Image (tube, rainbow, N blue to C red; front, side):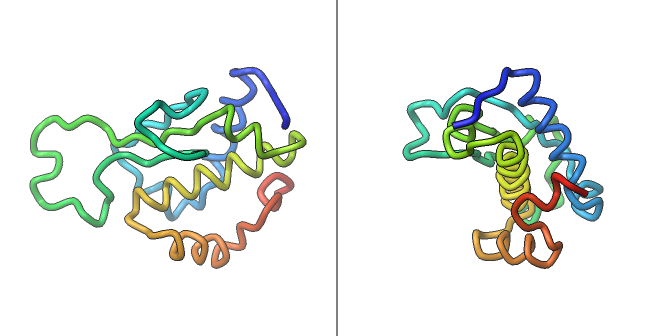
Length: 130
């Protein structure tokens, strides 16, 4: 387990977000990224992150015609910290979880997300050093 304070964790999330390929970032709209300590009781299992909303590929022409609350990407700080042992691992895991949830925003399934990470050469720890 590797712990850091809230400000440092948030800084790492911002760094991770900025490392997402620009191709994806340009298309993200109406999404809020929220850091929570742990999942609430409604979320069963050991979650590191969660996407909640209408995936981009499921939106129709009526989407956005009326005010709509943003989609949410939740990152669960304590759970992420439990699965890492160093600062580098923490940064890498934050990136991995954020990328994964952004993949769900685009409507990707688990296999497509993993394949996308391979296609963009986003392997473990790589983003930390580039």
